[in-house]
Image (cartoon, rainbow, N blue to C red; front, side, top):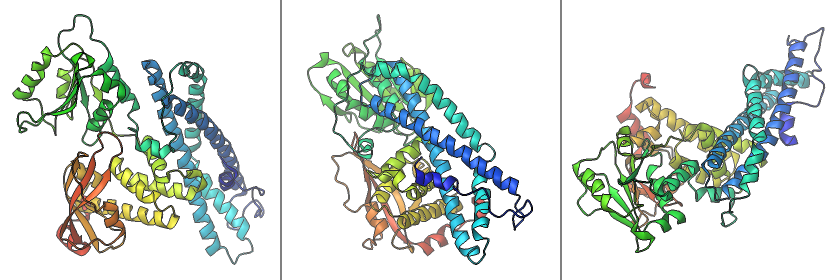
Length: 500
């Protein structure tokens, strides 16, 4: 931890200058104040150690992500390293930013309440010790110690991993900034992606006559389709199959509505069929016939089925892959990198502290994270970020009050939700419809950010572009919205406070 941060943990002055017969002028025990001082000194050392260990793990993860690793044990170790890195960064940032927030409140309080007192400096020190020292009472120090112990154990086992890592060829790519690289990769899904690729490329088991089927299960908007499309764009997969066909699992879809993603005469005629089951649908008779009619396909052909329901596991010839939403720690790592772009978050810990609070309000939404981080990245000033935090926090509370659920959850359920305006508090954008479009479809020019940042042209109903993905399948996300005055919304939707 750099000296600027360390100074927020502990003063270089003596433990307390306000001792008077064993106590302070306000009755704060000297022994208690000195205990807080010692706690801060201990935590300072632990956090410095945590930072240094994290740097080593980060360097190893970045080196590993730059190589074509095919061994499953190595991939498993890499995933363990990633998860530990996310947890360590989250814990370090949580303590650092909480202390900075407390220090800011103490400074503000000191300038107002103690300005006329000749004991100002001493009182502020004791007050600071009480406020900051309280952060590390209970499980605080133990959490840091436990994290350090876990990380040291992993580092002790990392020597062989690093040696084997050098035997894998490097991935040739442009030298992007971290956030540009993350914009172009499937963040948090590297392990699942390699599992799918391994299934697709592995030869048929001896004596296997049936088609090999991989089920992928996960809740709505967790990224099932995006993950599969990303796999299909991988050069190894693309070259392995002569045709890649996307089948709709919608029973109402007409015959012949399948989308051919690739068609060639190479790769021994092997085909990959991707079947997406919308909503909670199960395969009907027509889909079953379509699937089993593929049994005549050349050896090595494969099928991937994605669904929200566990029912499809019975179709699998191998273990299902289950996708979950990102952990809080992984989501914060993603959001921090995206919000700061090419700027180092440690240059401005105040901004990073605000960003952490904003991330907590987004409920793990990838789409929300990409949209909000883009807004923050374009204007890296603390006052602006605080305004975004207040708007986001107020709107989450407003949705909880009126609907009983987070706006992210409402959108997942295709229920009514609203979007805040940055420029006009009297306007709200009611989301009527949320849609996903392929890159071939024309999308609106008006963006959601333009609506939020500036007064849009007054239309009763409009469609806005929410976000364009930079990874396969390069989808665009739009909202069809209705412009409402806030007082109209409140009048229509007002409910009892007990719905919170």
